[in-house]
Image (cartoon, rainbow, N blue to C red; front, side, top):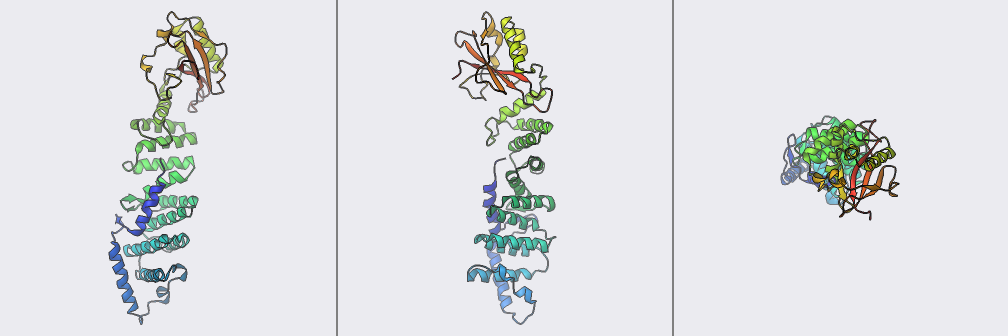
Length: 383
């Protein structure tokens, strides 16, 4: 999946400041909240003779920071916070306002301590997922992404989902985790959860392709093929960093379904068989060496994804009456995984073709993996 980190960082401050909650979170208007704070402040100041507990009236000085106006506001907020005996919507609104104050002055260490102390003190608070989301955001602002990832994972595993600003907290966490966590096994789980829980909130084409990529890194090739097969239902999806995504997925899926009976143990065995077919001018034998799926025929200048003209490609049309000649050795550009054989005599327009051979990468089938195939043709001289 493409990174959503920038988007996440843009809407978390919005959550901290506006708090337009849905589901279990109550909509709390900011102006109403400020009036509420003032009302409680007046009540508190007017009741100096009432004893409600010294700890309630004197918040921890550690949390009272900033200029005089901010300190006064924080004192009032902490006093207001203590007026509610049980965690609930009003407390959540106050906590959001306190957190917003710290975030606004970039006091992320204090913000983290405040929120984590809160969730530890009230483990059954229904809004703890929200508080931990803000905690993770604060760690990201401190460039402690690994720690932030632990909190995102903790939220998904241990806390019920909440919808804030029309967005699922679990969805936001999953999108962050697939960006922050470089672990293919966990990546598989995160993408699976994205697809299973939020199919209508994500680009499923990207999700299936990246799930397949994660499977590749784990070596679970059955999962690879299943994910790429699913992805092909969304062909045309733009996958950042993978311009040939459609071709890559299709080649693997098609190859998996094919009989694979054109492969050779080594490139030397393959080249020998092709040379014998040329010497005997046997179209049938040459076709037996040709890959039956993913075979290409293109000029050197064409893109790897350009398969134009393949529907009309037929070896027989070029071999009839034309003795094909070939170089004694493979081209100097050949290597351990790819090889080229220069041939000529194909047509008066483009007499020279380079046959392209490649080592097969297909760990799903150990008997095929590492064998060689004649995968295509390049028209004309190399340049």
